[in-house]
Image (cartoon, rainbow, N blue to C red; front, side, top):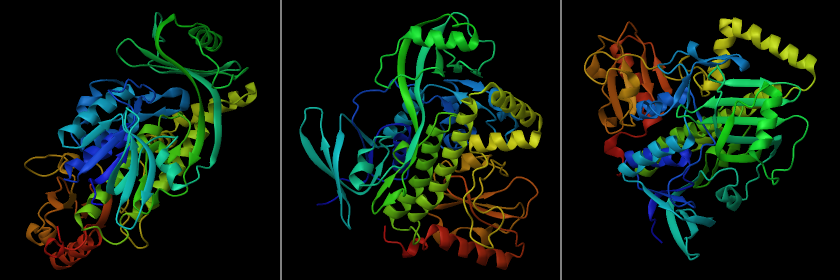
Length: 493
């Protein structure tokens, strides 16, 4: 049976939609299967961090998404000051999840990705050549779709993960959290309010359109998730923690949930990959969940493209797990620390917590490191022994010399590698040559002698300080061969 698509994506949340757009932009045929039918109205995830905005900017999407939300320079209650970040987006963007999905979905469709609603995957089988999915349609009938690769982005209850037989070890982090979107007669003075007392925990944030997200947890009682939740229950918790219920009214969405901390042991199984909540879930503290999933998609997209087009170096697809699993583990731990700090019980411990956070916020170095960890700006991938110190690190959005685009991330918009050379370098010796189909060339704007090869996901694949033209040319050819596969005249397209 021949493949219907190069890649089938299961799950139409932000992670799946971004991946579909990236693959379609690279000319990879892909279909996204989503059991829901119609546009999403989900608002569960609402924070977009600086690193994610940089990656969206590399796709021409950041400006439109920023226009839908509210910028928050920090979360003082957690000692986080994003305004110190070395990024063009030194803030947390607050915007409903449905806005993120709308923008990503519009891009994916415009680039040619097929997005099939009302398509529920119920079974999976893979062989050496591809993967078959059994899909149930809205009428209850079933059919089969086949692809060279499948990516499960279908959330915490992932069918793809279940069909692979992979465990999802972990534990419950917090139970019976109530969450709602409401209007407030008396909004808090601070843009973001987070308070933890002996009564419970309350978090409020505005969406900028008159609606506010309110998250509350009652320290004195946690009903089961199945218990009904009313606005009166939310009002009661908020009143006891903040001293006022803020005049909340007209809820458009209200729910009770529990938060788990879990991670699948491997993100790849043969021709099947897991990303987003299908691979890792953790507490909402710090707002890192959706961001981590989007960054999974960015990491995986160009690697699948390389495999489909036949130029992937040996082992490239394995680096998805090698790079993203440690990130998921770190996010799980970081969000867990934030959550447990917020839920501290005895008053003495809360006093110590508040004193430590106040001290951290006064230390520029500590505050910067905390913000870098939560925002993803300081994320780096492991580099091989002896590699240049820049290898594996995030590439800053440096200015480029002359012409357009004028910044590095705008130069990444074609979704290719970018070879950045110093001003005045012998550009002819640096040209990608046989790799011109997957590598672009740019000249750095500023005083530097370092040559840098930037991956399509905005991380540095290789760097070198050799100023000798012959040595530089040889080193560039070696790096391109290692990261970008054989030159074009040796690739069967």
